[in-house]
Amino acid sequence: QVQLVESGGGLVQAGGSLRLSCAASGSIFSINAMGWYRQVSGKQRELVAAITWRGSGTNYEDSVKGRFTISRDNAKNTVYLQMNNLKPEDTAVYYCNARAGFSATDWWGQGTQVTVSS
Image (cartoon, rainbow, N blue to C red; front, side, top):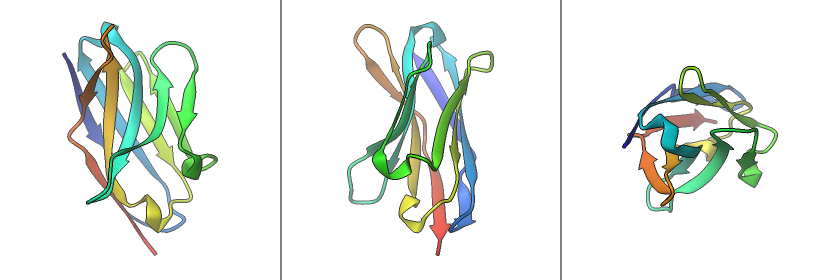
């Protein structure tokens, strides 16, 4: 099992920045990749950014390219999402995800609210 604890959400004005953190514990050795998803009430959860647990592979949703940066610190078992130039449409609950094991099991954090005011 993998446990994920997120922090760093909040309220920010448009154009501002926030950094989300996700600390992983448990079966760290089994993690293949981690990512951040977001969900607006009534809509499907969507991938924002992902990063491989080893190596340097990253992937971003088109609307956040150039504004968000995903990174990791393996020594701290933590993944970060630096969000710059935030827009009201970035408002959502952000969830940390870890994909682990041969069966690619998904593990989720509890979610953290990000609200961007115009």
